[in-house]
Length: 252
Length: 265
Image 1 (cartoon, chains in turn blue, purple):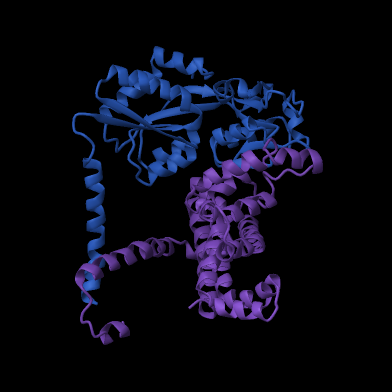
Image 2 (cartoon, chains in turn cyan, brown; image 1 turned 90 degrees about the horizontal axis):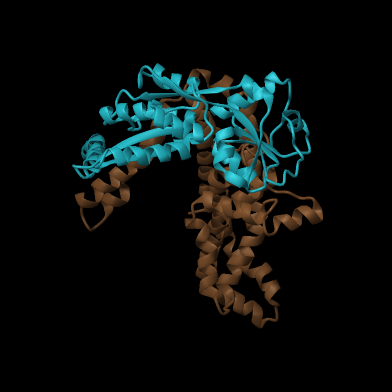
């Protein structure tokens, strides 16, 4: 029995050993920059990542795209990352409050659009059409920044919309429209743009009431702090801003 | 412990005992961690929240219904695999086990492409009957049944293969039809296997996440089962996620423990 207790006591040591060998396994000359970014940044950040890699030979940029709130949770739980770009100041605040990042900087703004299938089977032209109970409308979950923005926009318009689903991130909501399962979704205009002709975007004036500011920050425990700093500089530089604005983002 | 010390083959070798205990600790410690971090004082008020009750009720309801669906189709399927020889039997058995190894999210995508509003079958369901399955509770049941049915089929097929064929043969020589043999001899014979498979199937359905969120979406009270509620709660309210997890853990352990003593040995 005493020996089995010893085995239990040794467990953390063994597991920690496994962890460190895994990180040491990466080749020494190449460096990896890990960027956690909101799902809506997928296309533009991938493009910026390629630019960054071209300018820094031997550096590989890896991304973790997802709901900002999920990424923030992963970071505060100790996920190893260098840069965090969130879709709302509120999610960034959970990371800065935990002491995992300081001095976030807003680098773009984004607003919502209604995404409908190209044929627009629900014949939607304005935000108020989403209140029609016969339509299948998909929103982001309220925990996720795009869901919070949707609640704000609908609230500003005094509308009550009952969605068929609250999706876990903005890309999941968009996919439901692309597949034709939903008649409409409230997503960012950048997502509509990135989906090309698979969905149609409908602008609505109430979206101005729910503009999301996107903050970016170098993380306190960034293994590649210097590279992380350079990446955030690229994102806020004129060429970086051009890529982002081509994707539909607005200047901060 | 008693059997080990009574064993004539001597002490348990360290090479086996140490990894075995490590494995045990690895499986048990996370659950212990969950219980240690549980906010016990506020547990009562959190559990009384309607969202928690909705998610738990929906989870229990859909898992049970999915298990029934699996029983109705899965037991005959297992019988077919165990008792009838036909060309392509091996292929069919392999196909049945695919959802077992398939990532559930992939299963959800596949269900959308077939049973979705624009899907191969779903399109026809929509135009002919006005039935659409995604984003409905029925969709949750289907997603769970898709992922859980292989557990039932495999375990019932195993029971059928292990059962003594002579009883069935005796009944057949006495003039019983194949259906009568199945109903009066085979079913009672493999009943424990069916129950065991049913429990496995139910537990798997209860924990289903990927196929459900992909195919049925996420809406409280309609398609938001406990695992989905845990996942989304974790993003903004980790304490709530812990409470939900503990409830799910308690339900699973209670059901497995309660039924295990009675039917599975």
